[in-house]
Length: 114
Image 1 (tube, rainbow, N blue to C red):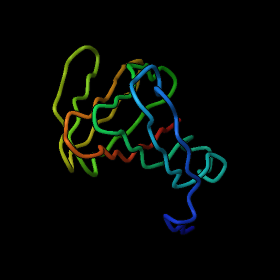
Image 2: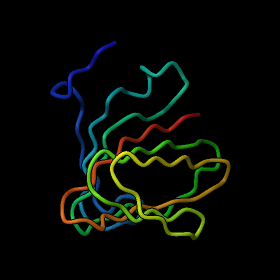
Image 3: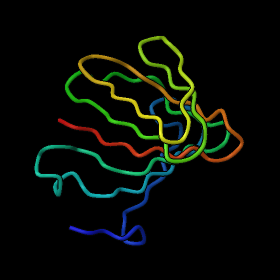
């Protein structure tokens, strides 16, 4: 299956998971297209000064790839600086959050697996 960026469903979430600002999401594929292997695959864009709030991955896991910008990622209470090309895997009851600490939008590729 091929999906052009122009064909992706887009949405905006205000204060995503208790974070700050309007986070934009472009869904690469819908959950029903992911063969029950994942429930989310998309580009997540966090504005300058914005964040995604701290949340738990109890029954799923998330792979994050930084595709533009600079993030402060907090995982299980420990802060990390993430830059373009850096990756993160959170699951098994672990928690994380993201804050855009750069001067340009932060774009993450996120995949939530079952």
